[in-house]
Image (cartoon, rainbow, N blue to C red; front, side, top):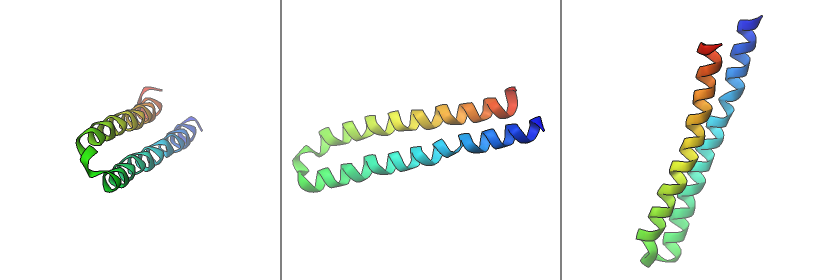
Length: 74
C-alpha cells in the first residue's frame, strides 16, 4: 500500500517537469518573437532569455529532486 502511494506521488510530482518544458518553450518563443521585431537588441534579449531558461530549469530540477526524495528517501 505504501509503495503504491509513493509511486503515485512521484508520478504526480513529475507533472511539474512538463510544466517546466512548456515554460522553457515560452521563454525561447518569446526570444524569437522579440528578435524578429527588433534585431538590434539580440545580444541583450539573449541574456534575459538565458536567465529565464535557468530559472525555469531550476524549478524542474527542484521537482525532480522531490521525485527522487519520494522514491528513495522515504
